[in-house]
Length: 261
Image 1 (cartoon, rainbow, N blue to C red):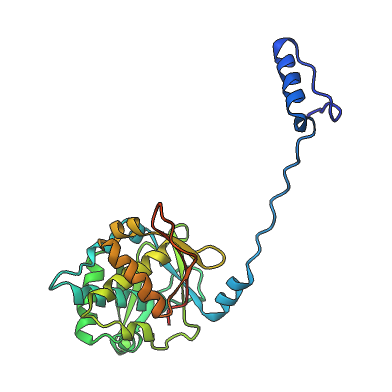
Image 2: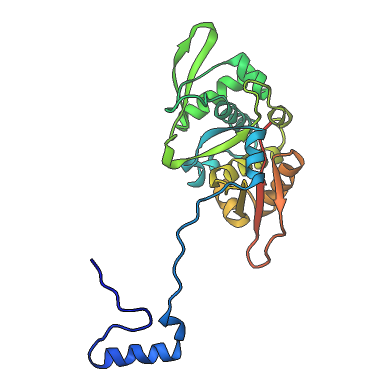
């Protein structure tokens, strides 16, 4: 058991150490009665965050490959643009199609027809970009099922490295945003990459993320100007909401993520 001296009386220590402590207390009387550190308050969820949770469902999203620069592989060069956009649309369709009921990640059972309904992709694009995601190690397949259904798994989905992507509350419904992002426009690729990066950073309790534009440009192989334009595009699509104004010293943006619909 640790014994304590009476309040206000410093413990006796010999020599210069005791004199130094006495001098400190004369110069800083608050040291006689140090403030007690309050017990850590229980975290409470702000009302805005509760309301956001009611607006949609959360699906786990592997974050490591995104925050380590994996989005650079999806290029905007001629010959790559359409396939890159389609691959990210397919990836998002798989993310939102996860079964939220199970504890461990369950296979994602989808047919080409179902993926097309979710994302607006054609069968040839789904086939090509399924192979692209497999080659990059972002997705694994567990074999074909009856009725043309394929069982998919997202790789790298571990509790310690996963974040949540919020999307529409009704499972299986077409995702209007993905249908609207055609595979022929470079700004659509920048918007998808920026959205995935924001999701991978993880939100606070109010659903907000701080994005360093220069860092985002490096992680996505997208110019600073195009990242800023992508943030504006995400706002117009109803996927993000700007909070405050950018800082001047470092171009950082405070963004609140909204459900993918």
